[in-house]
Amino acid sequence: MPLYYTDYLKKTNTIAKMCGFGYSKYRSQSEDAMRRSTAKREQKLIRDVEKAGAIFDGRKIPDYLRGSEIINKNGASPKTNVEYEGHFLLSRGDHTTKFVDMKLAMEIPSIEENVGAILRRRLEENGIITRRDIGFDLIVGPARGAWPIGKALLKALRYPPGIKDVYARRGVNGNFHLIYPYPDRRDIRTLIVDDVFTTGSSIQKTMLACDESAEEKNRALRKRTKGVKEKPASFYYVAGVVGINRAPDWNKFLLNTITLWIGHALRLETDIWTPDNCELCREGVPLYKV
Ligand SMILES: [Zn+2]
Image (tube, rainbow, N blue to C red):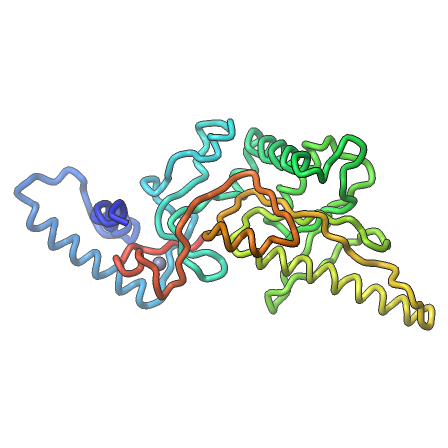
């Protein structure tokens, strides 16, 4: 990634400034040697800080890391800055070069509207939403991230009556739990939503949370009614929709989602590495937590 390598001096200077080191961009040519040695010291400092386990805060991502506005391709406001290019630590521990602040993006009305409209169109194109039928009765997603996506879709569908959206919360062990009430029915047609798809693990965990919740409900009911043979509550997953699909390997994505179609509002092509084979780590580019 030569882009990051050539920009590296500029970056380290800014990072050093953030760390409280003095730096002026108005240096004369004669100070080149001094600048080089300062840059070297700064690079070393950052590497040391990183080695010690420090991760820079995502909220302090400097302006020069902000990339072009990709959401803009879908007609959103050009003035929003929600996409970043750089070296980012994803929640699952992998490193990547691009990051879209979906939470911030969804707060921008034009983007929210667009995401809702695109997801609606995708569901229509795939025959899930038809003229007669919305095709699902329940929207489920991991709490916080999926919430604005679910709301945007419901808005784009003009809040169809009888369709609920519920969200799963992350427990201490990283698994999700469904804590909101949902209809007691067999085969509740469920649409899974999420903000970002990378490997699909949160979608899987959400489905697991649904199944566990139904199982728990059924157990309680069997106990109460002293053994009912029929399963009163269960989920039937019709499809999934996500704000951004950043699955690194498209063929793998298709294989992973062979039983459940997953649509996206936006496709983000990006490199994703494990920390051991991250190119940017090798180049010593500072890592940001997002
Ligand atoms: Zn890295």
